[in-house]
Length: 107
Length: 119
Image 1 (cartoon, rainbow over the protein chains, first blue to last red):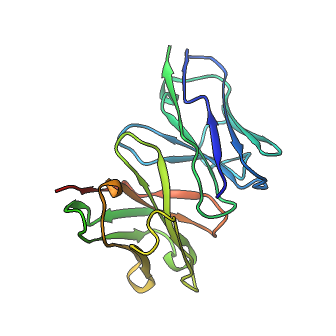
Image 2 (cartoon, helix red, strand yellow):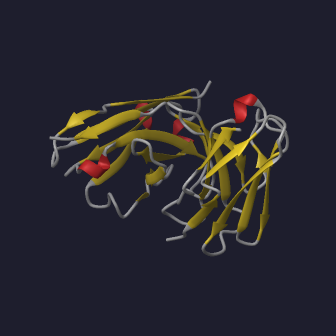
Image 3 (tube, rainbow over the protein chains, first blue to last red):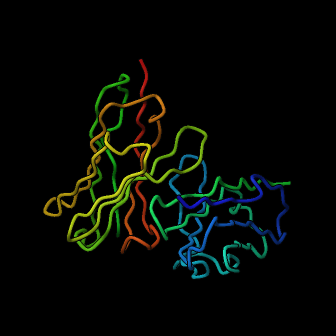
């Protein structure tokens, strides 16, 4: 199975901050990497697919990038509604492993 | 609009069975792969199983293989998960989600249904 190592597990930041979250795959997954946002009691919401494509309706302050097996989610300027838990997921090989999650909290 | 609605969750004893359903609307169900993903209380997301469009090819996580069966009824726009030999570690919210093909992202998710396995 492909392992997805997501970091950090938690992060405190302030409104307006630039934030990056990273996922490292244990092997090449091409660009089959997606990012989700989840708020308490809600299902995950797709933000970024294929490593860097912005899902329709998602604000442009969210972006994704890749460098070989390292993938990054960047929020350019944190807004109050961005405080949530973020997950990466590889969809290159089953099982489609998720990262452990990053809880983004208000500083 | 795209809507996925799960049902069938509840409290079941270890070793018991449960059948989850996911009713789909607002899109051509038969064109999409469908996936079950679960989340134990306070934990992260775990991919459980998917079923392909057209051929109905299935795949499972090792943790559920041999105990869970995914199926679909395109005429009823419905997805199912038959869960047998349930264990305490199967306790989770179960989400259904759609994707265009096996390597693609899940763009719509249901609200989830809670399965609790406890004596």
